[in-house]
Length: 384
Image (cartoon, rainbow, N blue to C red; front, side, top):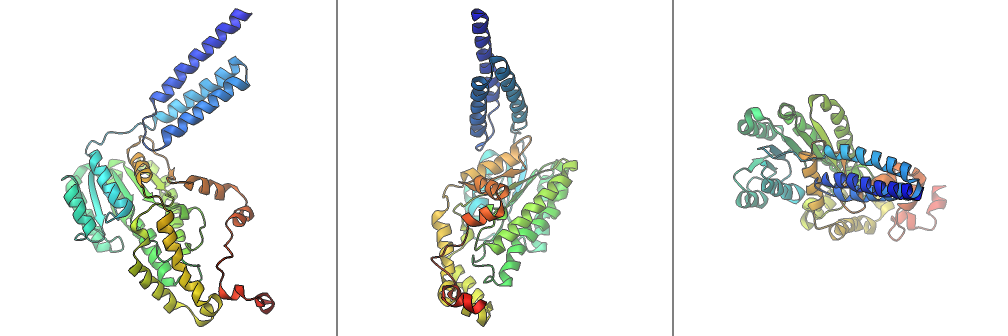
């Protein structure tokens, strides 16, 4: 029996090495997909072979490798092959970096910008290849969207547009939901949601022609309730649901839809100090006297500290976002959902899985900076 057992063990190890090698050969997709799969396959293989008999351990591991091999076959990257991509919000930030990145990879890039004479647009013209075209495209202006469509159609003609990346977005002025004026709520929805929907509807005929890709840049705030971001988070949550519905409806046309939920990255979305002053003034002008009295001037003026925190605690390297967008554009079978950034996926899973009371306990408001009325010792007595 001993020689038989020994031969069985060696056979199991040999098959394990072959199957593992087949899986590793498939790990060519960008982003962090490959590293995660290697870790999962390795841990699962060790668990199967150590916790079960050699026969059953090998059987389970073999089935797992076959499943993963089939799955990774869908992650093979398609050739660039003169594929055209339209990116909105390319003046700065992720859109600007993505335009350069895809141009370097050989894509035909249409970089939609808010100001075609601005510094961001000029830099794209100066540093990128002749394949990149800068388009004046305020996504809240239907006439500019129509004009951009005509220019894209003129260039791509019967090839169609391979991918549309709805990246343009604004943050607004983060504050308690009661303090945010309606004009800020409407502005966030106009840019982050309605603008993306209108651009999508305009360019879908070209996407359907190529059986291409629709990639919407949402946010972690679109899946996790984050304090101070009622306006921004609501608009991104709407975009996330729009993406999910369109993914189902467009599948029959061969168009694949992905939504990206980045965590905190350093971009220009937070704006400048001058912009903060204007937004803060608008907020103060729209507050009623009783709200100003309850919250207190010191608390209201301290809201801009959140913007400073956004700038200092965000990741400076946006390459994880770029790699995930590249995968969504280039993979044979892209994911429906991406969450680049530190702890982004963890937060999204945590909110989705744990009871609401537990989530609220861990993310309850801090007590070091409270509204004026809540700092008063007799407030509870007055309320009752």
